[in-house]
Every structure is written in structure tokens, then in C-alpha cells.
Image (cartoon, rainbow, N blue to C red; front, side):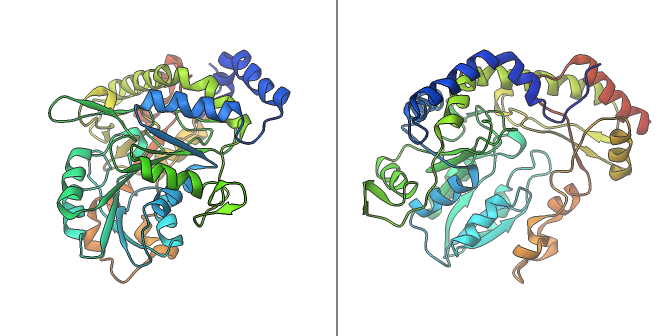
Length: 376
């Protein structure tokens, strides 16, 4: 059996080596390393794939989220509601912009932001909601949009983990995640479902005026060279990374399909053990693209199971071990532990198993067998 990787980028590269190399070589031949043809081609291809009017490439997913908030004109002290159970990048950009992060609990099944918790957290200072499509599962966008409309709030989708997922509305219509809120951000970190070979990110919107503002912000506030119309940053997707993404974007649906198939095999093998809760899919099958495959361990020692797997050469990880409201940088007297029962439980139960496009049946059988052996 091939060595098990948490994310097997080498095997994925081996399958697309010629296409990727040719795409990168084109950049080297043209020496258009910044804002070259590959960047513009990727932008257009991603707009077509997502069905959004505007894709603004940038340097990384964290920048994408920060620039999205800058473009909306949020002011210091404005409150932004987001999930407590997620990676710190979501909240750190809120703090960096001197906005007020308002962390709320998540749903126990999807791990996504709790609709009831959002409602309870809204104040006259609330200006935006940031749903995170965690681990590849789309958040309850229809309910979030209804709340936002009622209270005149922006919806900023953190789509770093769910690119390619579909959301089905109550009327049966579908939209790609990232094109649902007022603006969205994503990351092309190498381990993402659509990843480059370094850092990269993008912002999506259907708002023409907002897109114009965002394009200035990512380029030092310039629309005309040396004319700085808005306060900006230096955040551009370089041409080499765009070249890699151009090679991989046509394969994204097949990559997500492979992840769903691997997830289904995991879940089938683990289904009959009462100590294991396998991932929940809310809505249609295409609403989850399994950036991570995360189980919950009940009535057993999760950390001991993790060590058992590591001892057998099976990589695994805890996403995330500490709630954001308990992180030193984000502690606040406003937070009450009683407001985070789900998050506080999840951090002691979750365990992420290897998940990528190259997982083999033999590997999945070995991984699940090792888990069941420990939890028998």
C-alpha cells in the first residue's frame, strides 16, 4: 500500500504534470510574472465557472477576506458576526480593520454558523455576517440572506474551504458558493480543493461598483498608474500561481467528485459504530465538497485514538483544538461560555482524517480498520 498522506499533492501533480509544466513554462517564456495573461485567463475562467460577474484575484485567502471588508467601507467599531469554530483568519482580519468581531456558536451537525445564534447577536452596531462554509459544507445561506435583508446587513462568504460546492434554494434553484452573498473570498492554498503551488486567493462579487473598488484596493489603490484613488494594499495573484490554477480549474468538479466518493466510503465503513459521528450533508449531495473529512468521537478518548492512528502511520489532525473565543488574541468580556456549548463540545470530539483526490480504497480500508480496532 502506498504511504498515506493527509493531502497527497505529489500524486495529484503526477497526473497533471505535463499540463502544469507547460502552463508555467508559458509564464517563464513571456516573463509576464505580475498581472500577466495567465492571471487574466484564470479570472475569466473562474467567473464563468462560478457564474459570478467579477473575480478579483489577490495574494492569499486572508487578504481576500480583508479586502472584501475594506471594499464594503466598514468602519472601526462596526460589529461583524462570524462563527467561533473556524480558522483564525476569519476573525483576525475583522480585528485588523478595528472592526468588532462578534463570535457565535455553530450547528452541531454541519459545524456551520448557528442561525439562532446570529439572530441573538444582532445589535444596532451590526453591519455584516461572515458565514464560513466549513470543511466544504455550505452554510444555511437562505436563512442568512433573510436575516441580512431584514436588518440591512452585508453577507461576506468565507469560501476558503468550499469552492465548487452548490447551494440549493427552497425553490429548487442553485448557485455556486461564493456567488450568493454580497461578496465572497477564497483561498488557493496548496491543500485546498483548488490549490496553487504557493499562496493565492480571490474575491467574488456581482456588484459592479464594489468590484471596481476592490480592483483598486488590491493594487495600492490605483486604477491609473501613480494615481491613488483609494487606500489600498499590495495583494496580487502572481502569474506562476495563475498558471497552476489554469491547469487545475477544469478538473475541479472531478476533484470534488473524488472527494465525495472517498467520503462516502469512509462513512459507509464507520456507520455502525455508536462512538463515531460521520459528517452530515445538509441539502443535496453537491452541497458538500469535503475539503476535510471530519468525524466526531463520542464516549472515547479522541486524543488516544489520534495517537493510535499516528502510530500506524495514518496522519490525522484536530480542526480546531481551541475555540476562537478562548484564543488569547480574541478573548473578550462580552463572551460567556454558556453561549458556546456546541463549539466547546466539538473541540474535544472532532478528528480530521486524510482527504484528497488520490485516496485509494486500500488506504481507506486501512484507516477505517484502524479506527474501528481502537473503538471496538
